[in-house]
Image (tube, rainbow, N blue to C red; front, side, top):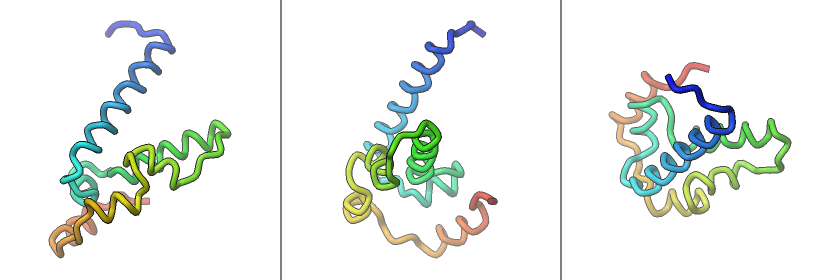
Length: 101
């Protein structure tokens, strides 16, 4: 593996994060529950991880602000535009696959 400087590693990780966020914004047809069931994380998880990093760094970011960074709009607006009601099958799969805390 190529040796990366710490700055390069951070730069490339940030670029990958931005690309993931862009991809998730473009794929508004993909429901969070489907992401959770298949990958074990969703847009909300990503925004929570962002908030955790901001909090650890002492930044005064709120949960609503971190969600807007990930969703590209206020969360309630995204839900109204794009979120469908989860089917019984999706809910059952989520109960089986939900992350253990």
